[in-house]
Length: 225
Image (cartoon, helix red, strand yellow):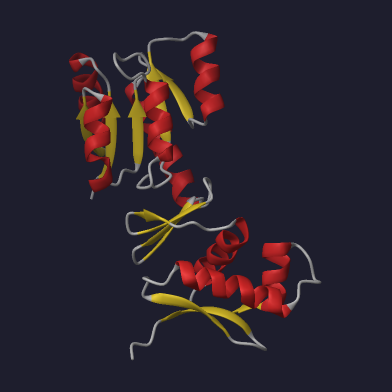
């Protein structure tokens, strides 16, 4: 099964060329306008996104920022592709956080290889954790329950992230102290207070954080009364 890739460029010839080059390896979805891409973004999940830099109304740099701030962004690699080889364009793309800057004259086999390598790296170092309808972004330190952003404190975010990565195992209190607070001197009462506050913000979720006293805490499915 081919992986989905999005390519946004205001030039029809560029869109056709890249689609032809990548068609054997990927399912390429093309968009002439950044606004059109953003309008369908919530309904799609991509393995990579290619973005042209110079576009009217919204340039590639602005589009990049809107993508990474979108709560449906899955953390996949975003690569700029452009005929602009200026130092300023390259530097700005990497300052923003793009994983690669590709010249439009790149050889087809190199283009495919570089996209594949970025996707493989992403799959091994995913920054997004999804569990049922809960989604957390480890890079942006944000959590979402369905379409709604959760008002998590930094400590609550770290507790939830740790529990999701270890589910369904129990996370011992000593591990919580070490991974969340970086201290061995956090009181049990402090841990339980943060867990209680976290559960209040997850009230509409099907899971909750259970405090198992001597053992630690665990993410468990709610028992319906």
